[in-house]
Image (cartoon, rainbow, N blue to C red; front, side, top):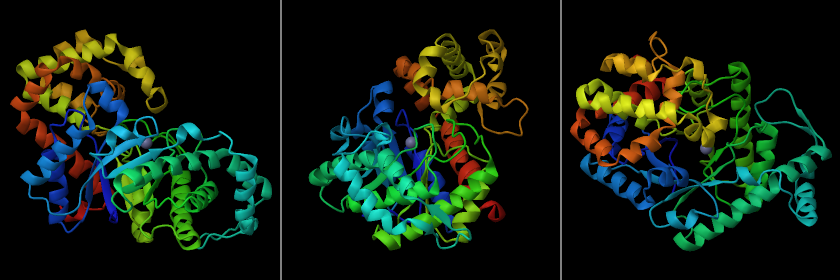
Length: 419
Ligand SMILES: [Zn+2]
């Protein structure tokens, strides 16, 4: 199984928006752009909304069938490790093996020595094709990269072998992620990580490093865009070199996690992948659920009342909802509208606050982030929530499609000039 050049990960917390999501890919296809949809859902999301991995598969299969989608699509077991991968084996054909928790744990002395010996050919002046200035790669840097990453890659290998044994080689896509950490990985570290991945014979087709800057959920990138551009370009070239040097899969590409809403870096990503003719996987952060809230608000009446109710409960349960996501959100509590204020709003005003349209003076990224992590409250409403999604499926669906196509595809893949 091969992942094509462009792929885009979509989350669907309540498994109701598969068709509306897929419509964006159909639109892109009409413009001659081939983007593979990948439905992703992590164990954390499943347990928060009390769903099972097979439900994601059923929803994806139905969307594909109903829209006659004949190109590839995948169901991604997102951020799995040895403790939860078993539950995803049957329903997934894409596995994001997450080893962030294993970074900085030490491999054995023997394993570390092997790693350093194998990579000592790169020590000294180290040039990456396409980057003018050579790096100075010291033996100490090799040792330190081994101490940081080798154990994690060995763990990735253990998880990979488990999946391989259950599903058969070549029957699934492998991604390796280490993005949920505070310290970013440099391009040089990425090269050494790929060396270790190749030594373990893991046929990774995508890799999600931690880039510098903040990738908060559902809002724009925060960080130094110029620095990001340098790093991203070097990462692309490092991957090229690692593919040739270590025999990794030819289609190996970068995966950008929490990749939705990163409007300020899309032109950078887009220009660079086109400059080098490279692929990309963008994994979005389950923001489709925010489009459901936007659509409910716009529907007005009972639907708006439900959206307001969910928001006011989210305010009351701020700490509980935010603590699991502390590393990936930045909310200024003082800038959250009170529930008294929100209950005065009409549907359009609510939607304007929530929708990620930076040009709208009512857009409120603090409210947007809080609602983003409040899907647990919607899940607790059960039928009252999902029934409302069914009732207003048209207006919600158009929000979902527009978000993916207009705000994401157009900006990343440069469709702006083509309407
Ligand atoms: Zn991630």
